[in-house]
Length: 179
Image 1 (cartoon, rainbow, N blue to C red):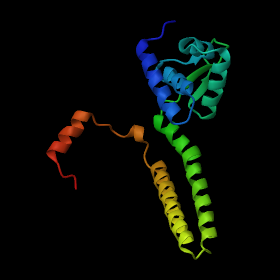
Image 2 (image 1 turned 180 degrees about the vertical axis):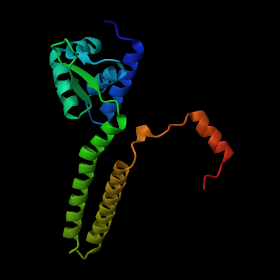
Image 3 (image 1 turned 90 degrees about the vertical axis):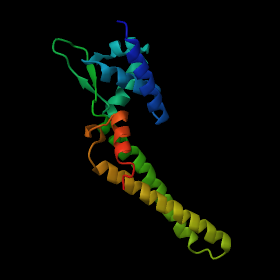
Image 4 (image 1 turned 135 degrees about the vertical axis):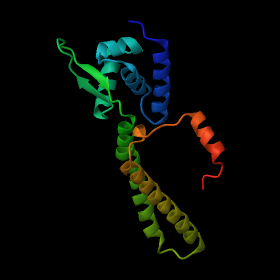
């Protein structure tokens, strides 16, 4: 089956975004192909569309299932497993924020706080400078964790109404001072 070139462009763009976020490029490409499809696909169909080996598809499918980015589904009358994309983008992103980025920030905060406690005993000018800068990093980690937690407690972004660029420009022209 030939793949629509537009689908491949979107898949490549999503793959690049995923790679920039620290995931494998082909994870993003595979999710995008499934997301843009109107029905679940088999591993063989995914491999064919993306030009990937059976082993690569198997590895990617397992990782995507673990992150809940795709789900295994069964099609009536078919014996092979099929896969469908998670369609809530916010659900996927918030899971990564919660399970990865928030953990990283908390780990850094713990390290900064521990270093800060060790530096409290120092009285010379150098130790005071280092302690002051570590205190700033500790505070930054606290703010970052709080912002991320607050964002994750809020409403899903993909359920909010999205304005077009034209609507936003008209709104700004009508009210140039939003305060």
